Length: 316
Image (cartoon, rainbow, N blue to C red; front, side, top):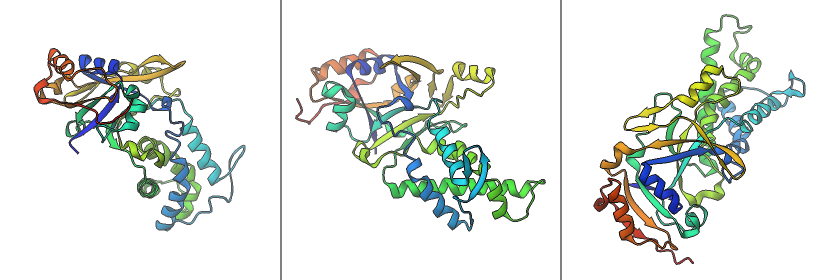
């Protein structure tokens, strides 16, 4: 896969090219209400399968008091998941498709066909991975069997983490890991959800969207109301550098009667390396190829190296 494609309106295309930036916006404010929530549909199945595989015996539905109204391990798991799913902590994304000229993409994201599809060099985008692992690029997983396999891997990682805690816990009441795991199930849930699932929930999606063949840049700033004020302020001041990329500090704008968190990813230093390598004009576009060529050239792009095509979709 040489390129991935960002479908957008002409206005957005104008800003991407002139500013040499692409915008990451809050995942919680997209038009798919199951974003981040889809993972809850497969969690119980994956958990049961992996616990059995790891030789851990636990009745998730047994009476076990955690707090008022939470009287089983399963209720605690569900409550912790709901707390995570419905939090307003922003996760920022920008989206690409593997397909340069997909009619459904033009309709949904390309200004109903009047917009543009911008081809980005996928190998160069894959350089986006910082040391904190909170900025990265992922291909979305749509097939439920693959989602469960990936989730089981994360559950196994969390169980391994619990085994490590068990090994060095000098205050433990039992030397039996299975008993310890049951007593510390709340800790396991927090490790699994806030260390593992927070990330995975951003790159699995309802199988109904499989034709989009989506790839995402994902940024998790780790913003929570409970943070110390100084740490909170750092999230709004911090600028991240990853190789030749730079990610601007967190900001907000108004859209559809909502405040939406965003951050701009600058790729200016990669323009001479042709990070943008193709432009596809939408099926309803009124632009001429020459318009795009001159506009790219005027902003310092190697316009002669960038393929400019018109959509093959017969859509009006």
